[in-house]
Image 1 (tube, rainbow, N blue to C red):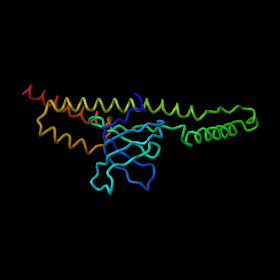
Image 2 (cartoon, one colour; image 1 turned 90 degrees about the horizontal axis):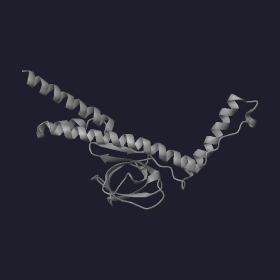
Image 3 (cartoon, rainbow, N blue to C red; image 1 turned 60 degrees about the horizontal axis):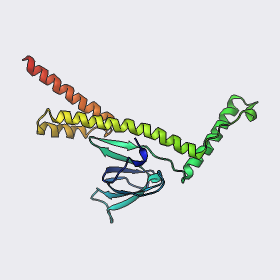
Image 4 (cartoon, rainbow, N blue to C red; image 1 turned 45 degrees about the vertical axis):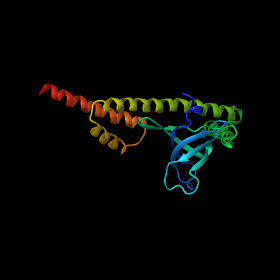
Length: 200
């Protein structure tokens, strides 16, 4: 699962800004511009009718958190650190300071003799990318499974029942984990109902 290319043109996307001063929105991805992953610009056509002025917004990856719709569910896309950001350098610096504090607390008399592990900004970026890809794979697979279960349910109920179930599903969190639980319960209920008809 490549976190750097997960968001694609045409995706339905949710944007939550890292700043409390800005209001998030949903829309459709028009373009993911070239650049260093974690610092790219994503061009989005806003879906909200209350959008004032231009309905097209350009959001930088380092300014927001994104969720992408995959079938039944929303997949929260982990944030990428960028070497272009001071964030990676700052994390590396804080890690050194924190490790020095831990060493000082554990062995105060010999703290100056204990070597401090230093992790470069590049290693922070790579570590964040690897962890993010693992997390993304789990979330994506849950969304895929929820969509499969939803399809199975849709094939076993009437269109009216299916619409009611889809409306009920929307009252729960949008993650694939909740989707799997919801649609599996519906399948179990259908199986019990079907078994009851066979017995009578």
